[in-house]
Image (cartoon, rainbow, N blue to C red):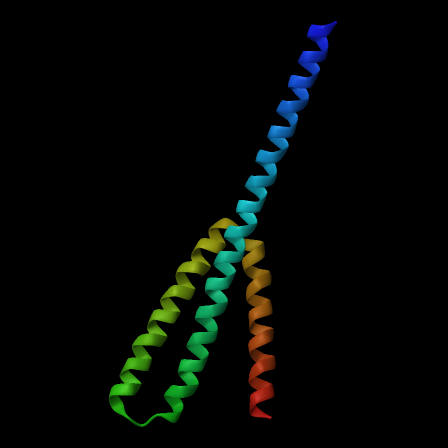
Length: 112
């Protein structure tokens, strides 16, 4: 009977460990999703601000620097987007829809 209790406790311990492993995996997946979304959002915002500044600047060298920066932002967005598309295409679709709405709202607010 004592051996049976030990087995039950060992089984319970294994269940707890497995539950912790699943929770850790879930946390890692959530972190990865948020990291990719953050990269997309930051690069999108940085690109938009650089584009607005580009329209205001007449100096050719500064404009070329901004074009390079916007290319970097575009590349970073594309890389994060491709990773998110492969990882969770539904999360990508939802996030991009939110990003577009946010951009439209912000643009309308500043143009008003």
